[in-house]
Length: 94
Image 1 (tube, rainbow, N blue to C red):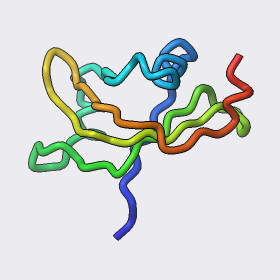
Image 2: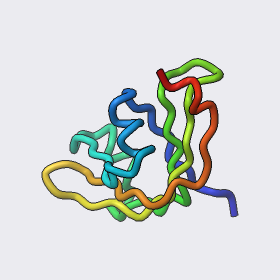
Image 3: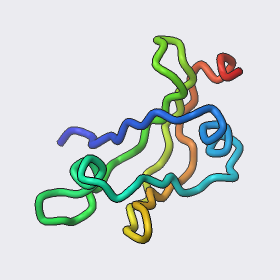
């Protein structure tokens, strides 16, 4: 079975907050685009194995892999974050 990975691009401010451990939830608006990415056809949350966050689109942009802990639906979609599994190009975070 292949890993199910959620890929998200973040602004530097939020990327840094996750990196330093002060942000444990990533929020997304309840919109059809995010519903399709976060939930299956039965309206159950997709069980991702991890999240890959990028800060930018360059090939050498900062990247981190974060443990996926689940999704909650409140006023927004709440993506629950676990520990950081891997970091790459963090020196390029300016």
